[in-house]
Length: 390
Image 1: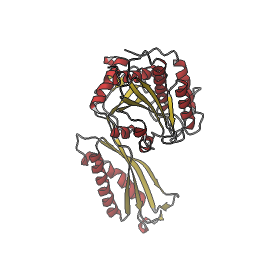
Image 2: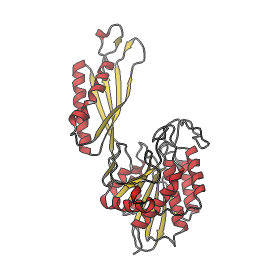
Image 3: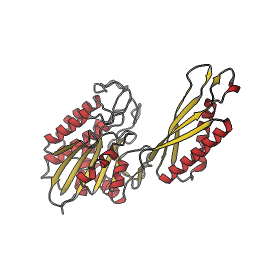
Image 4: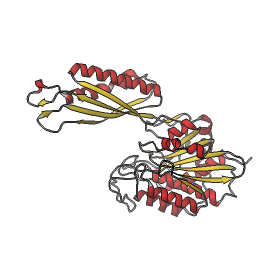
């Protein structure tokens, strides 16, 4: 195992907890990006600001090889009421770091500091770009950084990402070769019927009944339309209709998400939804429209970079603690946009057992500070592995 000694670990914990206590939503990460820019400048690292509004890129150069890589951390929080009672709980009502982006930001800052302060002693040759990205949670900050010139302003040969993972013990890591996170698409189904008195339902077209039939029927889409060896998830997550006890409402709205590792499977599911919606509309005499909004593509690691990260992870936590056969997740990640542009790899870092509600997007979640040094060590080993002296 190779985790560098971090005499400033207590400082990192303080930064992490400070960011946790002051969460900021997508594209509002002004305070967080100020901290990032201040710390990078303090380490003597070149600082660039403004991509995607609150994005920050730090640049560290050594040697003359011309090779370069990007290391990415996300900074935004979630619109969620925190239910923890520790001193560093959120001070912003209705907003919390429930996904560990406070930890991701801090680990990358720690790696930047260690590399900068020990640049002559660490064996690497090339350019490291420290990418602090806003708006990962559903807003696509990675895509916006790319569209605003991330890879043109900061040329890099490959890009690497990391996410903490509850349920995996601290001291273990997961490296996937190929798909690691699913692509996602949202849908909205509008049901238009004919409102009427609840005591005279024969005079109307019941949108709630039609919507309920849709919810049931949509659960057959994956089971009976997608090949059994493929993976897909269809979840109806919202059903809005009605305002009074005694009125059959005029309309209803259903919303949800689709997820898969293959765009062609998502398209197959979409066509099935449209077909079922048409059948339910005909059965109930309602009008039903369906709209899809394609969000993040699948996150797929390139083979060479996955092997590089496996070696870096092995150097960090030991071969026995690096998992390579873990199932990918049906969660989505906008790092996928970066992997469409550059080869790279996205890994999981153990955050502990995930018990007591301490899972991602849960109001009791907190990043595990005992993973900070491991994350710093991993990033340093990625740099050493990707940019060795020749």
